[in-house]
Image 1 (cartoon, helix red, strand yellow):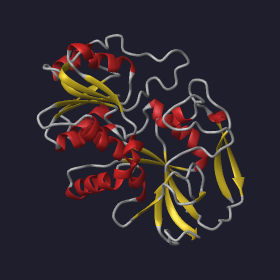
Image 2 (cartoon, rainbow, N blue to C red):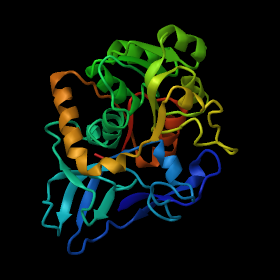
Image 3 (cartoon, one colour):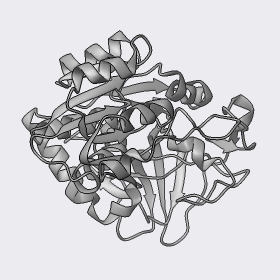
Image 4 (spheres, rainbow, N blue to C red):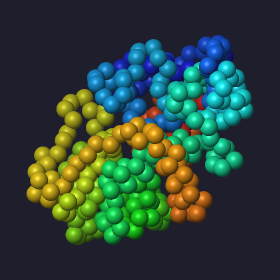
Length: 333
């Protein structure tokens, strides 16, 4: 049988257990041109909350009754597609289920001998590509610049900061709690980290970035984005990657009231969607993989088990009770 998590109710505010229904259905047969993937791990990402909304976005909203959308990695156990062989491992968007049928579009081969499978839906997957292309292509990072990263202990932010350090920048993170800040500075080699839960962000910002910032990579939105706008240097760039502080709000999204700082400082604020760089994922993975092999880049996956534990694990995205990339193992050994 195939355990599947179905999306059954659009949430208002935070998603809860009633948003999904766990069902058991027969493992499907495949037709010509299709593959059957035994999924080992699925990715949990803040973007999931936006996919549940009905309104227009950069990707079509999920339909009620469909399998919960998610990145995944697993093994091809049946194939009627010439591009894939039984026994290959692949990553793609298989959804939150133990077995996925696909025509192969969006799936690509990965090698578990080169990296652990969860890394292919983390640093070598969508979060890593978001970080790499966001900081190098959208922000156009340059040596000697000062870079501020929110969500610095998360899947995207942790890679953004490390890439900026590799590029020769001063990097300051923002994270929640002393453990995360310690991890960001001591293990990821950021120059400093502001604890937004226990410190005055604006005051600490002035201390660690006395001359302002050249780049702000925003994963949280809200008040921290507004504070960052007060510290822009001339021709600064803000990358809007996410706004996790606003995803579960039941009222109007809180936006910056001081956006004229962009005008005064001839700065820019640009939205970033990783799918725009899909044809360059291989390039990004090769660069990140090379840095991992050289020890210049560190990857951390926070892995939980059991497809039935998806709602609880998903909520860790918003409670902050996780470190690095959040992954769920969905197949039983």
